[in-house]
Each structure stands twice: as C-alpha cells, then as structure tokens.
Length: 169
Ligand code: NI
Image (tube, rainbow, N blue to C red; front, side):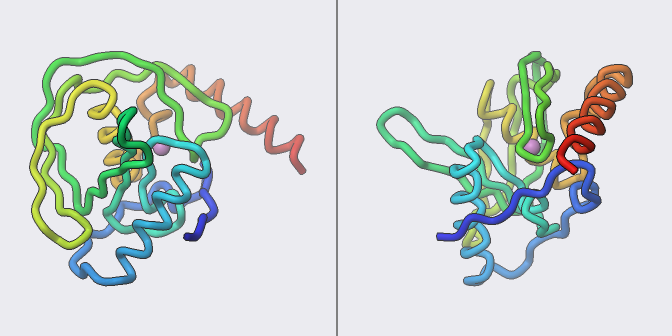
C-alpha cells in the first residue's frame, strides 16, 4: 500500500490530456491500487491518475455500499458516450483546495471503458455515481470542475487561492 501525493491546482499536469492505456501489466495494477489508497486516505470518492502526476487514462471511483465498504471501480480509457437529464449539486475536488460549488451534470450517463485487466466494461450510471464519473473523466481531459463555474465565481476562487498560498509561504 502506498499513498501518493495529490497534486493541486494550478499545477500544469492537471491540464494535460491523459494518454490512452494500451498495456495492462503489473505497473498499471500497482498504480490503480495506489490511487485507491490515496483516494481513501484523502478521503475522497474518486481520483484520476493525473491527480497524482501520471497523465494516463485511468480513474478510480468509490462505489462502496453500506454492506460493502471500501469498494471501488477502476475505469481505464473511459468514455461517456451518452448523457441524459441534468442535475445541479455540490462538488469539490482533492486537487482544488478550499473550494466547493454547485455544478450542473448529466443525471444519467452511459459509460464504456476497460477494467484493470483490459476487459471491456459498459454500463449506465445515475445520480451521485454518474456525477463522480463525469468529474473524473473531466480530469483526464484536463478539465477541472472550476472550469464549469461562471467566470466571476472562478475569478473569486483564484483570488482566494492566491491569498491562501501567500499565507502558506
Ligand atoms: Ni477532482
């Protein structure tokens, strides 16, 4: 088990378009396990590889239930092929410190991906689960949830962050 450092905005790796994964080996399995450990330690409900500085198309999403704690799904090369309905709810991000905001997302999505062994996955996701997947797939495209806020809200956050970072120096 290894907990990796979570990279925070405005680090440029968060803006990189993650590369497709073609090799499903032990290195990938270790990366995924570390991502899950890092996500739970944070704690968070989802993590994309570029958040730990690895610009590859893989995310982990917590899908624990009350009877099945610490369960997660790995999505390699995920694609959201269809979305319907829209819902606004609060979001935050482990890479965007001291910020939560309402974000509009599809309520229901269709997802195709591969698992950690390279087997194809295809499923529908709804509500909170769909929201987390959309947020994580955004990361792989170099998009952060703050990009989906109004320019005013984003400007206010940037100002706030500048102050926080100055105080940390
Ligand atoms: Ni995030």
